Length: 226
Image (cartoon, rainbow, N blue to C red):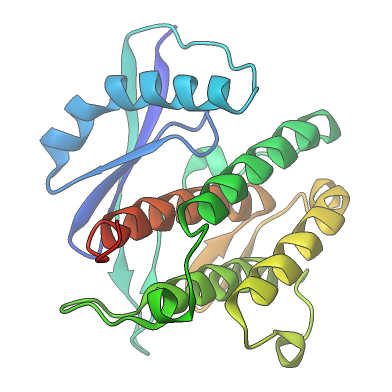
């Protein structure tokens, strides 16, 4: 039986997600290239999991592009991102340990890529970039908080620390503590025109952290000492 691939167009780039492998994705400039890149992305994902001590079963070929969704802008200027059919099924309790292990793995990678950075490294500005590295870390924390808020599981925004590492820690600890409640969030909710579910929150949290870890790696290579 072929494995499913879901495509979304977001901010001028194409992202392919593999729902059976949470956190497995690949990005390319156009649709044809991203589809062609999926098999290698699956291979790399399995290797990545093994590197973190995670046991992941391989997928049977061929793949099947199940959905193609383009992001669109709502009337108030909000960008509405994809909700796939694979985001709809409720989470079951047996899945939670694997999601926790994956979240721990993505966090190890993120912290590892900024290990040894000092305040100057975190605040250095890069031409053409929206944020410095400290800003990217804070963005990851705020985005994860926002995902949780979509399904009513976030803490008060006033409690978010201003320091990026403190923010990352607080939000992730909160997410992990709330994981059992994800099982009880079996439905979907639509806010500002975008549909959310507990499964979509986890998909986006894993994707977003891995995506920005790669982003920081590229910026790190531009620092003088690297």
